[in-house]
Each structure stands twice: as structure tokens, then as C-alpha cells.
Image (cartoon, rainbow, N blue to C red; front, side, top):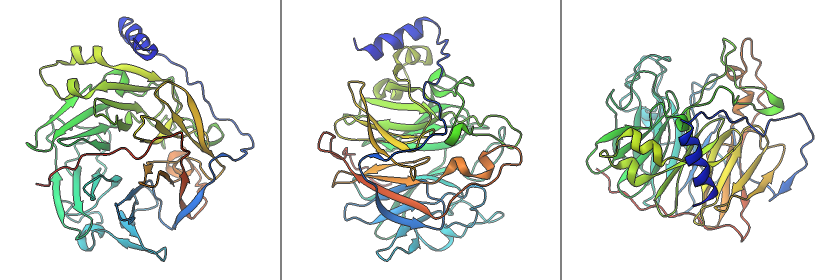
Length: 388
């Protein structure tokens, strides 16, 4: 049995009385660059928290309608001259409050391009508040060549109840795995039948522990306008290269994993599923992750300007550290073994800095890449999913 397995079972035996204290708090200190050098990929006027890349090198960016950025096109392709072209175009990119949202990008939180070169996006819809039912949330799939909508998945209230908030997704050949950061849960969607199930709702692994505050640059906590900590439940998510494990965590950590087979199997009840959850690593707050073919998980740290890599054996290495990397978000790995890193500066947004919060963003918004050393694996392959 692995160390993580032994520890996870000890936590289970203790009734999940998980009160882990974050061991990686931010402090104001000089940041000497280390690891791989940053290579500039894109310089954007809009806040960018996600990137995606086609097999022929076309770069797409996710531009969420966060406070102060409501008029963004939401998704765009970065053209060779550095300009951006709204994707898929037309009414999809022109949404505004009061307009229909069924065929519009309302509040895109993440984008991904998998091995069939189609683009997937999570649309969080209009803000319905902590207790509201946001029926506008949807999972979208587009053809990157034509911009045609291939699939739009809306979830029933039993799967996406009041207060739930779709966050990020990963795919295998038949399923989409999605984190709910509003209430804390994992949602599994069968892409062939359209059936969806809500799993591990309220489980400690999907819940942000109030004792682990989401601290960012210079120990600035992620705060709501009323001064309370912003509770971001299950957030980053990764699927192991063999598809057998789903890794996930609340924003402030720690990192957990669960067997995908049990997660998908509705005959495995919640109590039985809980016993299969394993503690992986006591991570610091993470805003984004990526995973390579060797099983290394790349960690975009919220409280330090760096990306580290957690190896399957539990060792951690610095991939890149630079004062330009505060709050790196949803990363990807290219066929050339380059790690693409968007930097949205989310901790510097006035809306994340509590009562009377002052905007500390330093424009423009950058996307960088680093060449991964030979010691790391290649880009993890993702089986294509058939469009419906």
C-alpha cells in the first residue's frame, strides 16, 4: 500500500476529521527566477484564465466575464499577429444581461481542446447567488474548424442544485468529469446517453476547509465584499493517463483522488465511494493544473509565483518560478512538450480583495510557455469523443 493510501485510510477511520493546516503560506519576499525560463506567447487586453491548443498549433484563450471584464468576447483565437478573433463568432460572443443565453457564451470559466481538435467549454451562466438555481449553466463542444456547435449539455436540478457552480472538466472516451466549486461535488456525464450523476457532494475531499484560508500574493486572502473568505470548493481536476484515477481538490487544498470506475458506477453508494477516496498531497492553494503522460501533476500555485510538478512518487520540483507568474491558472501541455501558462492575476482583482478592495492588476494579461525538461513526460493523450 502506498503512503498516500495508508494516510487516506487513516483519515477515513477518523471520520474525515481533516483539519490540515496549510504548510505553504505566502510571505512578502524577493522572488528570484528559477526553473525553466518563461517564453512569451500572447499579450492580451482581456483577463485570460485558460488556454487551449489544436494539433496544428492554433491557440485559443478563455476570457471570463469576471467583475470589470463583462464585455469580453469570452472565447477567442489568438491570431499570428497577436490580435484576437472571437470564437465561434456572432451572437455567441455578444451576450449581455437580458439577452437569451441558450446560444451565447455567458460566463466561460474554462476551455479545453482534446484529441479530436474540438473545443470544450464550461459556461457558468448568469450569477444566481449562493442559493439560486442557475439554469443557464452548460457544457459546450465546438468544431474548431467551422465554429459549429456540436453539443450543449444542460444538467437537471438534481445534479446541479441551487448554489452549484460548474468549474472545470476532463474527458475520457465516454464521460465528462466536472467539478462543482459552488457546493462541492464531482459530476459525471455519460457522453453517449446524456445521463449525469452527482457524486461526493458534501464529502470533505470536495469541500474547502475554513481552516485552510485561500491566501495569495503577500498573504492577501481571497475575500468577498463582506469580508468573508471566498469559499471555492472542488476546483482543479485531472484524469490520470490510464483513466483510472480522478485527481481534484478545493482551491486551498489538499489534493485527493478517487477511482473513476467507482465514481461512474451508481451501484456504488456514497458511503462506499467515500471509502475509496485517497489523500494524495498537502498542496498549497492551486488555481490551475495540468498532467502529463508520466503522471506528473503540474501545480499552478496561488500563494507563490510559480508552477511546481508533483511526481507519482511524491517528490515536488519547481518547473518555473518568476515574479510574472502570480496566480497561474488552467495550463496545457503541447505536443512539443511545452507547458502553456495563462496568468489572470485573479488575486489582484478588486472583487477578490474584500470590503473596499482596490484593483492591483498590472495589464496586459500574459500567456507564457516553458519547455519541459526531458525528465518529464509528454502530453497525455485523451481519446476523442464522438459528437452528438
